[in-house]
Image 1 (cartoon, rainbow, N blue to C red):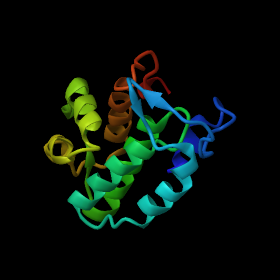
Image 2: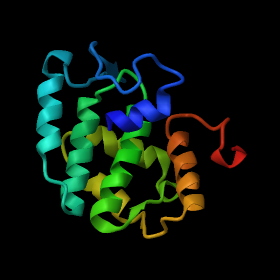
Image 3: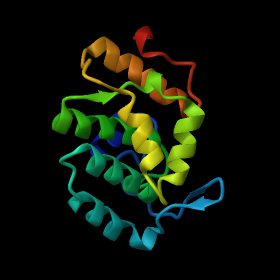
Image 4: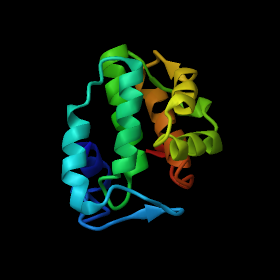
Length: 154
């Protein structure tokens, strides 16, 4: 995931691809404390990801770790698609998942991943074309509030 983060943000952040050295929180939720972050990431790295349930559980754990100061959601969704594509030959069509439903499922995923699994399972697609991939990236960025830039403008 560090490589994905670095690629996406190398021209924006000096910390692109680097594990954070500060504590962070969002909407009252504290992510993994920096003093335990390296241990948490080692643990997550060793988690199996050979089937759908394992992949989503690993993805949810990485969200709780939140290894970067900024850009975790965008990097994480691409990382998730890489695991799904590698193991299942499918990816998430982010256009099929409502932003608020996804965000709420992610908030609750540190307790239970059932809701997240349901949303993602119903949005899986075997369409791996570049055009569809880029449209899914746009939808994924929309979750973070970014809609000014569109990959079709490239």
